[in-house]
Length: 239
Image (tube, rainbow, N blue to C red; front, side, top):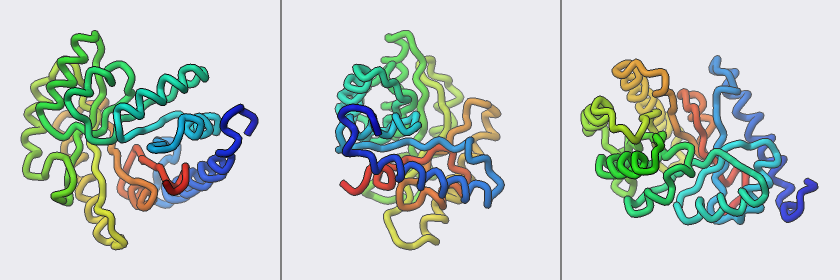
Protein backbone atom coordinates (compact mmCIF):
# COMPACT_ATOMS: atom_id res chain seq x y z
CA UNK A 1 0.00 0.00 0.00
CA UNK A 2 1.71 3.17 -1.23
CA UNK A 3 -0.96 5.78 -0.70
CA UNK A 4 -0.40 8.35 2.02
CA UNK A 5 -2.64 8.05 5.06
CA UNK A 6 -3.74 4.47 4.45
CA UNK A 7 -0.57 2.53 5.25
CA UNK A 8 -1.95 1.27 8.57
CA UNK A 9 -4.86 -0.34 6.74
CA UNK A 10 -2.72 -2.64 4.62
CA UNK A 11 -4.49 -5.68 6.09
CA UNK A 12 -7.62 -4.66 4.19
CA UNK A 13 -6.04 -5.90 0.96
CA UNK A 14 -5.78 -9.46 2.29
CA UNK A 15 -9.28 -9.30 3.76
CA UNK A 16 -10.80 -8.26 0.45
CA UNK A 17 -8.92 -11.03 -1.32
CA UNK A 18 -10.25 -13.60 1.18
CA UNK A 19 -13.83 -12.33 0.87
CA UNK A 20 -13.72 -12.41 -2.91
CA UNK A 21 -12.26 -15.93 -2.93
CA UNK A 22 -15.05 -17.20 -0.67
CA UNK A 23 -17.70 -15.49 -2.78
CA UNK A 24 -16.26 -16.93 -5.96
CA UNK A 25 -16.07 -20.45 -4.54
CA UNK A 26 -19.66 -20.33 -3.28
CA UNK A 27 -21.02 -18.74 -6.45
CA UNK A 28 -19.44 -21.38 -8.67
CA UNK A 29 -20.78 -24.13 -6.40
CA UNK A 30 -24.32 -22.84 -6.98
CA UNK A 31 -23.89 -22.12 -10.70
CA UNK A 32 -23.63 -18.38 -10.33
CA UNK A 33 -21.28 -15.88 -11.94
CA UNK A 34 -19.06 -14.36 -9.21
CA UNK A 35 -18.82 -11.16 -11.25
CA UNK A 36 -22.59 -10.68 -10.92
CA UNK A 37 -22.25 -10.16 -7.16
CA UNK A 38 -21.50 -6.69 -5.79
CA UNK A 39 -19.44 -6.35 -2.62
CA UNK A 40 -20.33 -3.27 -0.59
CA UNK A 41 -17.65 -2.36 1.94
CA UNK A 42 -19.37 -1.11 5.09
CA UNK A 43 -16.85 1.19 6.74
CA UNK A 44 -19.03 2.51 9.57
CA UNK A 45 -17.02 3.93 12.50
CA UNK A 46 -13.81 3.53 10.52
CA UNK A 47 -12.12 6.69 9.20
CA UNK A 48 -12.19 7.73 5.57
CA UNK A 49 -8.61 6.48 5.21
CA UNK A 50 -9.81 2.92 5.77
CA UNK A 51 -12.51 3.37 3.15
CA UNK A 52 -9.88 4.78 0.78
CA UNK A 53 -7.67 1.75 1.39
CA UNK A 54 -10.51 -0.52 0.29
CA UNK A 55 -11.05 1.53 -2.85
CA UNK A 56 -7.36 1.42 -3.70
CA UNK A 57 -7.65 -2.37 -3.52
CA UNK A 58 -10.34 -2.44 -6.17
CA UNK A 59 -13.58 -2.11 -4.18
CA UNK A 60 -16.01 0.16 -6.01
CA UNK A 61 -18.95 0.32 -3.59
CA UNK A 62 -19.12 1.64 -0.03
CA UNK A 63 -22.01 1.59 2.44
CA UNK A 64 -22.83 3.50 5.60
CA UNK A 65 -25.48 3.17 8.29
CA UNK A 66 -25.66 6.87 9.13
CA UNK A 67 -26.31 9.69 6.68
CA UNK A 68 -23.87 12.04 8.43
CA UNK A 69 -21.00 9.58 8.23
CA UNK A 70 -21.68 8.86 4.58
CA UNK A 71 -21.70 12.55 3.69
CA UNK A 72 -18.54 13.32 5.68
CA UNK A 73 -16.61 10.46 4.06
CA UNK A 74 -17.89 11.34 0.60
CA UNK A 75 -16.35 14.82 0.91
CA UNK A 76 -13.01 13.49 2.14
CA UNK A 77 -12.80 10.84 -0.57
CA UNK A 78 -13.75 13.40 -3.19
CA UNK A 79 -10.70 15.42 -2.15
CA UNK A 80 -8.64 12.26 -2.73
CA UNK A 81 -10.14 12.00 -6.23
CA UNK A 82 -12.05 8.87 -5.23
CA UNK A 83 -15.66 8.42 -6.29
CA UNK A 84 -17.19 5.18 -4.96
CA UNK A 85 -20.79 4.20 -5.45
CA UNK A 86 -22.38 5.09 -2.12
CA UNK A 87 -25.04 2.91 -0.52
CA UNK A 88 -27.24 4.08 2.35
CA UNK A 89 -27.92 0.86 4.23
CA UNK A 90 -29.06 2.05 7.66
CA UNK A 91 -32.31 3.47 8.95
CA UNK A 92 -32.99 6.76 7.17
CA UNK A 93 -34.94 9.58 8.78
CA UNK A 94 -37.07 11.64 6.43
CA UNK A 95 -35.38 14.88 7.52
CA UNK A 96 -32.05 13.50 6.27
CA UNK A 97 -33.30 12.57 2.80
CA UNK A 98 -32.56 15.89 1.09
CA UNK A 99 -28.86 15.67 2.00
CA UNK A 100 -28.45 12.26 0.37
CA UNK A 101 -30.22 12.97 -2.91
CA UNK A 102 -27.71 12.98 -5.72
CA UNK A 103 -25.00 11.48 -3.51
CA UNK A 104 -26.14 7.90 -3.09
CA UNK A 105 -26.07 5.26 -5.78
CA UNK A 106 -28.68 3.20 -3.94
CA UNK A 107 -30.78 3.58 -0.78
CA UNK A 108 -31.34 0.10 0.66
CA UNK A 109 -33.45 0.98 3.67
CA UNK A 110 -36.83 2.23 2.49
CA UNK A 111 -39.02 0.93 5.27
CA UNK A 112 -42.21 2.98 4.89
CA UNK A 113 -44.40 4.57 2.23
CA UNK A 114 -43.86 8.01 3.80
CA UNK A 115 -40.10 7.66 3.44
CA UNK A 116 -40.47 6.56 -0.17
CA UNK A 117 -42.69 9.55 -0.93
CA UNK A 118 -40.19 11.90 0.71
CA UNK A 119 -37.35 10.48 -1.39
CA UNK A 120 -39.45 10.94 -4.53
CA UNK A 121 -40.41 14.52 -3.68
CA UNK A 122 -36.86 15.60 -2.87
CA UNK A 123 -35.51 13.81 -5.94
CA UNK A 124 -37.97 15.56 -8.23
CA UNK A 125 -36.99 18.90 -6.69
CA UNK A 126 -33.33 18.10 -7.39
CA UNK A 127 -34.04 16.95 -10.92
CA UNK A 128 -32.86 13.38 -10.36
CA UNK A 129 -34.30 9.88 -10.00
CA UNK A 130 -33.09 7.96 -6.93
CA UNK A 131 -32.64 4.19 -6.96
CA UNK A 132 -34.14 2.49 -3.90
CA UNK A 133 -34.70 -0.91 -2.32
CA UNK A 134 -37.61 -1.90 -0.12
CA UNK A 135 -36.40 -3.15 3.25
CA UNK A 136 -38.24 -6.29 4.33
CA UNK A 137 -38.43 -7.63 7.87
CA UNK A 138 -38.94 -11.21 6.78
CA UNK A 139 -38.15 -12.62 10.24
CA UNK A 140 -40.69 -10.19 11.78
CA UNK A 141 -38.26 -9.14 14.50
CA UNK A 142 -39.59 -6.35 16.70
CA UNK A 143 -36.14 -4.77 16.96
CA UNK A 144 -35.81 -4.30 13.20
CA UNK A 145 -37.31 -1.95 10.65
CA UNK A 146 -38.85 -2.89 7.33
CA UNK A 147 -42.06 -4.00 5.68
CA UNK A 148 -43.56 -7.19 7.06
CA UNK A 149 -44.50 -10.04 4.72
CA UNK A 150 -48.14 -9.13 5.30
CA UNK A 151 -47.47 -5.68 3.81
CA UNK A 152 -46.25 -6.84 0.41
CA UNK A 153 -49.45 -5.58 -1.20
CA UNK A 154 -48.45 -2.08 -0.12
CA UNK A 155 -45.14 -2.45 -1.93
CA UNK A 156 -46.93 -3.69 -5.04
CA UNK A 157 -49.37 -0.78 -5.02
CA UNK A 158 -46.72 1.87 -4.53
CA UNK A 159 -44.54 0.41 -7.29
CA UNK A 160 -47.47 0.41 -9.68
CA UNK A 161 -48.14 4.07 -8.84
CA UNK A 162 -44.70 4.91 -10.29
CA UNK A 163 -43.58 7.80 -8.12
CA UNK A 164 -41.62 10.07 -10.47
CA UNK A 165 -38.54 10.60 -8.29
CA UNK A 166 -37.68 7.00 -7.47
CA UNK A 167 -36.80 3.81 -9.28
CA UNK A 168 -37.58 0.58 -7.45
CA UNK A 169 -34.55 -1.66 -7.93
CA UNK A 170 -35.32 -4.58 -5.58
CA UNK A 171 -35.43 -5.57 -1.92
CA UNK A 172 -33.16 -5.78 1.10
CA UNK A 173 -33.27 -7.81 4.29
CA UNK A 174 -31.20 -8.70 7.34
CA UNK A 175 -31.18 -12.19 8.78
CA UNK A 176 -31.51 -12.64 12.54
CA UNK A 177 -28.24 -12.51 14.47
CA UNK A 178 -27.98 -16.17 15.40
CA UNK A 179 -25.63 -19.14 15.21
CA UNK A 180 -28.39 -21.18 13.61
CA UNK A 181 -27.65 -21.60 9.91
CA UNK A 182 -31.11 -23.13 9.51
CA UNK A 183 -32.79 -19.93 10.72
CA UNK A 184 -30.62 -17.72 8.51
CA UNK A 185 -31.13 -19.84 5.42
CA UNK A 186 -34.86 -19.95 6.00
CA UNK A 187 -34.99 -16.13 5.99
CA UNK A 188 -32.80 -15.88 2.90
CA UNK A 189 -34.86 -18.48 1.05
CA UNK A 190 -38.12 -16.68 1.87
CA UNK A 191 -36.63 -13.35 0.79
CA UNK A 192 -35.53 -14.87 -2.51
CA UNK A 193 -39.07 -16.16 -3.06
CA UNK A 194 -40.51 -12.69 -2.45
CA UNK A 195 -37.94 -11.13 -4.78
CA UNK A 196 -38.75 -13.55 -7.58
CA UNK A 197 -42.46 -13.04 -7.06
CA UNK A 198 -42.15 -9.25 -7.29
CA UNK A 199 -39.85 -9.56 -10.30
CA UNK A 200 -42.53 -11.54 -12.14
CA UNK A 201 -45.22 -9.00 -11.28
CA UNK A 202 -43.34 -6.04 -12.68
CA UNK A 203 -41.35 -7.72 -15.46
CA UNK A 204 -38.87 -4.88 -15.15
CA UNK A 205 -35.21 -5.42 -15.98
CA UNK A 206 -34.31 -2.68 -13.49
CA UNK A 207 -35.86 -4.66 -10.62
CA UNK A 208 -32.79 -6.86 -10.22
CA UNK A 209 -31.21 -6.17 -6.83
CA UNK A 210 -31.44 -8.58 -3.90
CA UNK A 211 -29.44 -7.12 -1.02
CA UNK A 212 -28.79 -9.59 1.78
CA UNK A 213 -25.79 -11.05 3.53
CA UNK A 214 -23.24 -9.52 5.89
CA UNK A 215 -19.89 -10.58 7.30
CA UNK A 216 -21.27 -13.54 9.27
CA UNK A 217 -23.57 -14.95 6.60
CA UNK A 218 -22.58 -13.67 3.16
CA UNK A 219 -21.73 -17.09 1.77
CA UNK A 220 -25.21 -18.34 2.63
CA UNK A 221 -26.64 -15.22 0.98
CA UNK A 222 -24.76 -16.05 -2.22
CA UNK A 223 -26.39 -19.48 -2.17
CA UNK A 224 -29.81 -17.83 -2.08
CA UNK A 225 -29.21 -15.46 -5.02
CA UNK A 226 -28.11 -12.28 -3.26
CA UNK A 227 -26.71 -9.76 -5.74
CA UNK A 228 -25.38 -7.26 -3.18
CA UNK A 229 -23.46 -8.20 -0.04
CA UNK A 230 -23.00 -5.64 2.75
CA UNK A 231 -19.68 -6.57 4.33
CA UNK A 232 -18.04 -4.64 7.15
CA UNK A 233 -16.12 -6.66 9.75
CA UNK A 234 -14.75 -9.21 7.28
CA UNK A 235 -13.10 -6.36 5.36
CA UNK A 236 -12.34 -3.64 7.89
CA UNK A 237 -11.95 -5.70 11.05
CA UNK A 238 -13.85 -5.72 14.33
CA UNK A 239 -14.92 -2.35 15.67
